[in-house]
Length: 114
Figure (cartoon, helix red, strand yellow):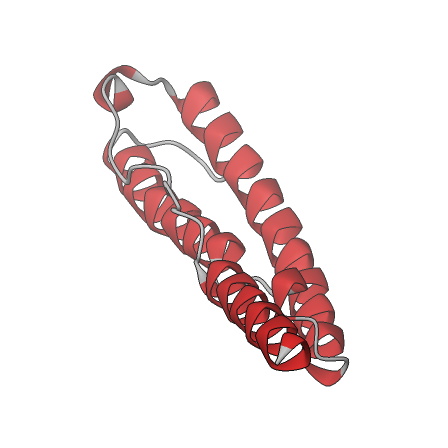
């Protein structure tokens, strides 16, 4: 009887840990349009475009690292190490969308490329 009770407690604990591990983090991506965008000059627009492009490259590197960790955690099975949030992908896409908006502004202001 004691073994059965211990097994149930252990099973319940493992199930709770698995469910908790599957909970994705909330992601807050950068807004496509921001207050003050219309007042940016060409230099500021080009600087923002370049910074966003650097951030996208870094986020995509981080996403690859998360993918590798998830593969290892899935093989071992260590679900508490897995990340299902796609945070890096969401943030990178938001920055790319923002850059579309900034490129449009730069074009309307007659700015050259970054």
